[in-house]
Length: 346
Image 1 (cartoon, rainbow, N blue to C red):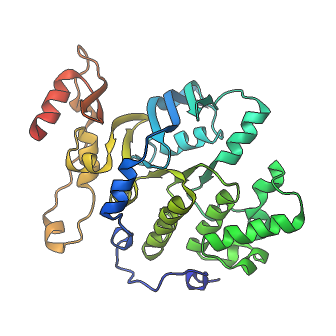
Image 2: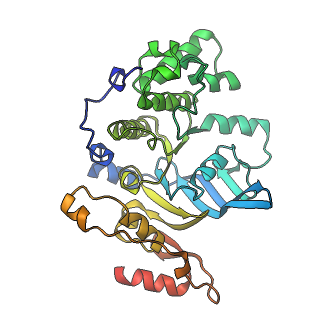
Image 3: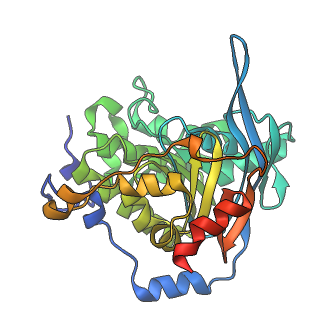
């Protein structure tokens, strides 16, 4: 098996005990200022999105009337526990999962449901996805050359064989892999390298929006930071918009501009990343934050995780709604809950 150190831009060996978050290149003050100074244009908008799956006794609602939007050039985080509907939303955006209700608008055009072949072709070019499992998402019987250029084959994205090979070589180099790796099979690579191949497969289509579905959850801790830094670097050089799906809040904090917290198919809180971390309102968000391990052994020993009990809500007479509790900070709650949850931060 090829080791991660054989990549073209491999990072130096790191201590296995080092957390991924500590190795991530955090944005500088100038970078943050530039990010906030950019004119904000909505590249993706999700309105009242619901996704149902057929089961033996009817239908199971995996996503329930979800609303959010993503600005062009930002990194938007979708966070929640396993089974909360994060991946289902991502797969609905790239048209893998059919939607039951609502609209998905990309650059103002509805892209869910029945669309024209021309628009479908545009979506394939402009929206790509990085899948969670770097091994299961790659065809074990195909060489890397075909895997990376599969999108080009399906859309006719090249005129000559020389042009196709040049695009594959460029994509591999961009993610830190040598061009000669194109003649190998997926099983010859480490987990980190396989994920880079998945990223190259997405980049070769020159997308504007990249949906990253837990791209580091299946990787070793020492490799996670390399992949995160790669995504951050590619976003800057290519001007990508990134939707980052994850369950690890400690990692999401370092890479995202805004976060949406989802629980059982419903978004319960949304706001700027630091706002969510410094002033979490919904009890489910607070429970997720309390589960983050602390790097200091003494503080970690005294850390007490809180547990979310859905039964704490009383919506019989006062049903919840999507409320802007603070400027740019939204929460799914009723009037009484908004007052009680936001009082400590006023």
